[in-house]
Structures are given as C-alpha cells and as structure tokens.
Length: 241
Image (tube, rainbow, N blue to C red; front, side, top):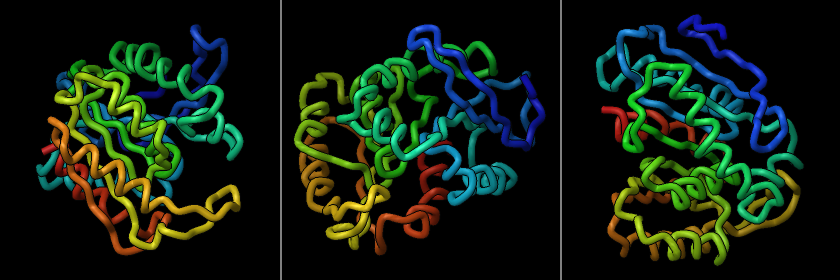
C-alpha cells in the first residue's frame, strides 16, 4: 500500500464475499499521521468527486485553516455506465450485494488499514445521482454503521422511499440532500428524459417528518457538477468541524 500523503492512490480490492475485484481510490491528507485517528469520507463516483468536485483540494483548504477534523477520503469509481446502473442504481441487479460489501467488507478493510475513529458518526458517505442513491441506500440499511450521508440529486422512486419507511432506527442518521431546480426535465447519462425534482421533493416530505438530522437544499441549476461542486465546502464543514 502506498501511504504517501497528499496524493490520490488507486488499487485493486479483491472481494472475498462477492468474488470480484473492484478499483478503490484513496487520498491521505497532507498532514496525515499514524499518531492521530481520522474520520472517513467514502465517495461513490469517486473519480468525479476528485476531478470535477476537487474534493481533496477543498478539504486541504479547510484543513489548513483548521476548520475541519482530520479525515481520509476513500472512493469507489465506476468503470462504465452499465456497471454504474448495475451496482449504484437502487433497482440494479448487484445493488443490494454491493451495499453489504461496503458496510461489511470495505469498511472493515478501511479500519484495519488506516488509523480511523471506527464509529458510525465518524463516517460520511457521499454520492451524486445514482451514486447519491447508493450512499443513501447504505445509510438507510446500516444507519448505526454509517450515520452520515450526502446525496446530490439522487435517483428516487417509491421503492426507494420505502427503504427509509422500513427502517426503525432513522434517529441515528444525519443526512444532507440536494436537488437542482432545473431537474424537472433533463437528459440522463443514459440519454433518457427524466424528472428528478418531483420524487426528490416527495422524499424530502417524508424525511422532514422523521426523527433524524436532515438538511435539504434546492439549488439553482441542473444535474451537473457545476451545481454540486460549490456545495462541497459547506458539506465538509457541516460534517467535519
């Protein structure tokens, strides 16, 4: 394992439970030291969080100003649009198995490999679009293991809202949820027309009445990183300060 701080690393993770190999990315902050315990940020669509969200630069800027706690960033990139539909989409064939993989196998590897705080309140899941649905899906299934999750413009349908309705331990959760006001009619990465605004408002309506920490924001803009990137600093401060 390359433990050079201030760099984005990548390696192949062999899953014993799923019998497959997945690329994992990880970033250790410039001030990384084994002497300290770190929070863990896990991003889905991680190549986009690094490239378009510049999450590590935004984190370093806040760390330098002493505005956030020590944290490492671990990510799962998507190798193809088909893979993303299969694994991150709540209705995808491998979705449920991959949720279990993250909650059992991946997090246990993270805690063994890096000096982490090892509690649900020190872990933040982040995702955009289908990867945002995936982040919320994990939090809804394992709220004590992953208490904090952000979803930018997640795909939502009635079955997805049902996941939250079936969970009796929502009080563990601290969720951050955004949707763009232009997302009532847009073209998805798969080339289909979609309305994400209406079902996300429906999810907000349900979660707003539940006993959890919950921040919901409707943003000017559409289903793109130009809308999401400016939120990252605010989110890192919200969870890490």
